[in-house]
Image (cartoon, rainbow, N blue to C red; front, side, top):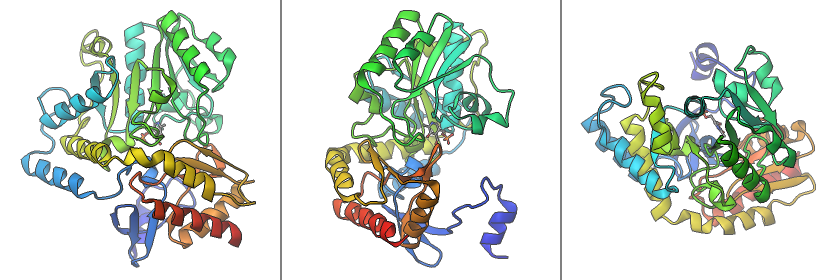
Length: 393
Ligand code: PLP
């Protein structure tokens, strides 16, 4: 039987219309299907492949690691150099209070671990989260995501969750001495690239500090240079108590992390001991791949060009069909009048060799998040394909 039929029959499906392209190879900013058709990856495998696909340095690091060892024991027992070296590198690149990394397997697990850590450290029951936020699909993460359509079918969910409006001045009043944490995306992704107002986010930081509430920033999608700085929060002069990472953290391999001050993290060691557990968290192969990818990103100076590339996006993506454009570095939401129009543009883009998709809570907006290694010429080509597809539909 053909792989397409086998995929539909034997691989658990999550939507009635999967993109259904069968990829044979992915390299740099390109993916190639089994017919040899080349696609520009405009979404970096959903903000994972920030340095492109199959970078030789990442492949080399993986090959060296798998010849030494892969899984050896559950998380947190043995000293695994790949975990240690990557945690040290991350800590060196982060503000001083974000010095201790707990590795997970995915972004959702990082969210789960961070929520538990905040409850355990503060001894408080409540969590403030935001409308149109996305933090993962497991039960705890689902409880805090900001969309009732996605939550409602899975109740009962976690109690004590308060949803607030992002960028709303008055919401700071919801943070009090019963709040364990405020969890937010530094830049809201699936809401269609919504940036925080700088005064607002500073006010949240202040309120959290005053009330002893932990502030958690989810940079699972915004991290690793996407917004033009290594960490998006650098642009807002606000440092969280816990940082969530995932996606690009593994350079194409699965991994997630929540990062906090060691004093906070150490509360997971007692009452109960093993306050958070994982068999595969911080897999050594994922750690070496992620570290190699981060080195490529930093030493390749790809972030230096992001501001210029953002200008190219703004200049090139002009068309009567495009209603508005939200950008944050090399990241954009291209808004159309409806989901129907967006869907037609997306299908036309894929036909014309450009992989893209819509945003979870903004189905009328097209996702634009290419590898940060994309050249200016390739970026212009990608924009031209979108514009020509707008003409065609
Ligand atoms: N947080 C954000 C902002 C995300 O975009 C995602 C995934 O899209 C997650 C958390 C969950 O990550 P994962 O899919 O690895 O569980």
